[in-house]
Image (tube, rainbow, N blue to C red):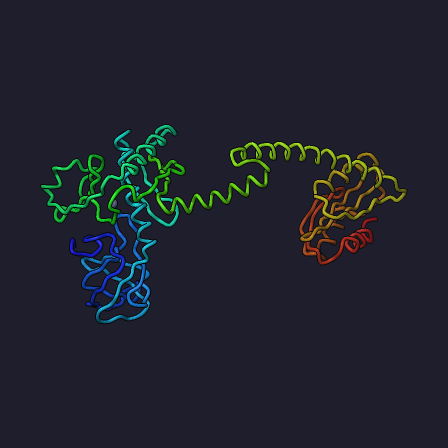
Length: 392
Ligand SMILES: [Zn+2]
């Protein structure tokens, strides 16, 4: 194992190797090489990608002792491997950053990391504690970045289980022979099969971004290195846009948003009051008729508004009946009501049901009040005409 190119030197980006086997499994066509710099997914580190000659390597998996390079076309003989170095170096930065941050939490607070995830977004570690304070997060991040700045070497050593026992290892080893230790002197001693940079300085920076409660553990989201810088670019764009929208410097964006929310609440209150006034005027206008039935159409009124108009009119003018129709882009709604002394004999519910039948509608009510809605296949005036033909 230790002869593998990626263990000899994690910085090998290009290599020549010979195809020893070509086969297919349920993940597709793959080739096995006599040696490789492609790191197969494992130990929390994602797969390397790249090319073998001109053929894309989309996934690399270790199956038993075999490293399978999943490729899009067959390959034979000697091939030139080329890693997608941006992807690999990103994994090295994130993975080493994880070692450092994990060790900082142990050194400062004895919070153990129970799992680690490195995907395409934030990197996470799950700490075996229910609560981590903001101050603890800050201290761990500070300590981790101190280790980065000190640019300590990251050493790897192949040892036997007995030799490994002489190191202050972070957790128990999974293997008993051919143990690979990843060591940051006087800070972190760890059994690990991943690829790491030569020194902590190459991690560049470690930033905790958020935490979340995971059952009895705390999940810490963080990022390192180039991935972090790209994330900052995205955040910078968002901040700049937000600052522009609230016309304030970036440091005052929160104040700007709070002011907007306040203003919005006030406006909503004023708008509601204005609507009520408008509705009162509308009701007064509708009431000024000698007809026994007050019939009207509206655009984009809510069902609540129609109900209020109908109830107010029939309460204040018991001799009247009311037929109201409103439409918007998606639906037509109807409210029918009769005052206590209305001379209209037809049942509000019967007339509503007969009308709704012509517009795929649903609704109901009783003899004196009924409401419902349907599609917009008929315009409001036509619907009202259908109603008034029956509502008398
Ligand atoms: Zn590692």
